[in-house]
Amino acid sequence: MSHSLGIAIESLVATLLMLTIAYCMLLNKRLKCLKADEHSLKATIGELITATEIAERAIGGLKLTVREVNENLRHQIAAAGGLSEQLDKQLSEGDNVLRRLSRIASAARQPAAEPQPEPPLAQLSPAKAVAAAAQAFADRRRADGIAA
Image (tube, rainbow, N blue to C red; front, top):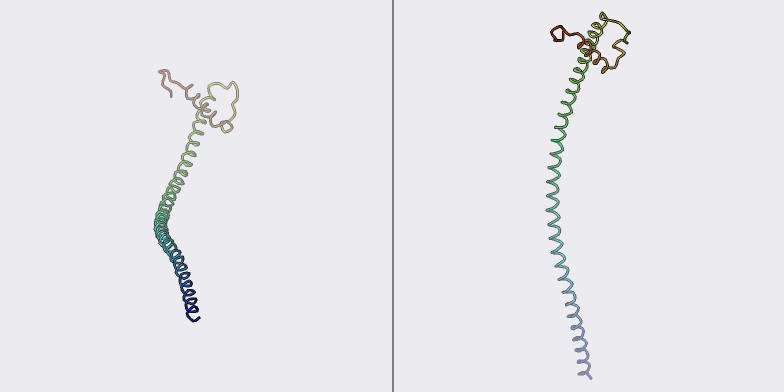
C-alpha cells in the first residue's frame, strides 16, 4: 500500500507540476504581449514628445509673428491717422478756395446783368457752386480768346 500511495502522491505532484508549467506558459505569453505593448507605447510616447516640441516651436514662431504684425499695424495706424489729419486740412483749404472762387464768380456776374436773383452761394451745394464758378470763368473771356 505504501507503494501505491507513493505512486498516487507522485502522480498528483506530476499533475500539479504539469498544470504549473501550463500556467507558466500562459503567463509567459501574456508577459510577451505586455512587453510588446510596452515597446509600442514607448515609441508612441516618443513620437508624442517630438510632436509636442515641434508644436511648441511653432507656437513660439507664431507669437513672434503676432508681435511683429502688431507693431507693423501700430505704425500703419499712426501713419493713417497722420494722413487723415492731412486730408482734413487739405479738404478745409479746398473748401476755402471753393468759397473764394464762388464769391469771385458771383461778383463777376452781378455787374453784367441781373435778370434773376440767384441764391447766395452759401445756399448752393458744392457741386452747383463749382459749376457756377466755372460758368462765370468761361463767361469772362478776353477778345483774343484767353480766359481772364
